[in-house]
Length: 391
Image 1 (tube, rainbow, N blue to C red):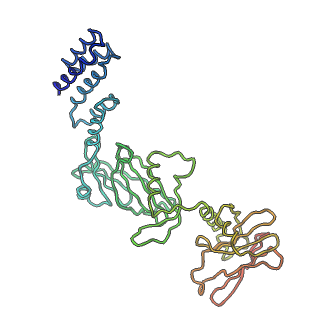
Image 2 (image 1 turned 90 degrees about the horizontal axis):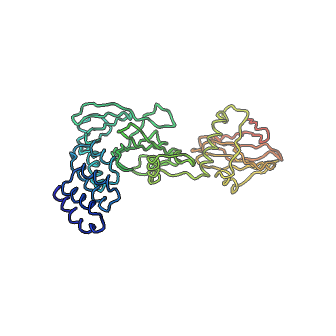
Image 3 (image 1 turned 90 degrees about the vertical axis):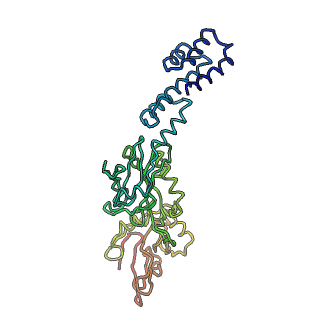
């Protein structure tokens, strides 16, 4: 290698020698004839702008790089840090990649790890490890012979009961989606309405997670989940790390996750709000809390096309939407649309209570909700003015 570099430099020498001083050319010739880091640094200090400088820098970097032990991970990392523009940087990057790419197969990792949900090989700075993931998101870091090096736990991301056990989804894999750093990547379900995907950095014990949550949909053949909803990490104005951006792109590519339309999201929020504030509406309540609707919600859009009942100061319509039977009213004085009534759509009209129709008392603001239950009928009376409820 030394003879090759010397010959290369001497071949290039006559091409540029005529434009340089004799002293500069002479020192360059001595440097390539006796290539040492000290001699290269001496030349660069004396002639930093010389036409020979790039060749001397390359010579100096080669002396640094090829003197390194190829197994010396720390030395290669330091070379990259100290020589970020070196000609030999691609070779250094390749060595770093090898130093951080495990040769332990998933089958070998699983056999060594024993009881666990999944296991993968993880190599850091030319040292092999095994990551063993438990069903409860516990993580054991093992040596290649199975000895326990460290125990950790990945945080459980959920909007539901924190005690609920996550359901791990395969595959569990080690990836480098953003460059050189390795991440443990997998996904899990919380019940049937929350899907979580994550990147975990074992190097610094940091987890990045994104969630898609909403309404469970009917699953097709072979599907483990199907959800219509949204991702809170996609909310406008939030600062997101590169890891979160990558994970959000994964959600968009997942055909089992259906992004909810904004109009339906407004409707779902209104329905949930109404149900929370009127828990006894169907049993013992004597007053109701109406919710003023956003005009962009799909309830309002559906109301505009529905058959309407006309009363004193109010109009109203009955229809099914998003799995619920709702009554929407319109105030002629304020122009507001309100969610008056809400209950799950009746699945069995012969057995269960079924809201069949609505109508106003003559020229009043009192709305009658007329029900069938088997062969029997009954009604509820709702005052849209006072929000009172009579049975």
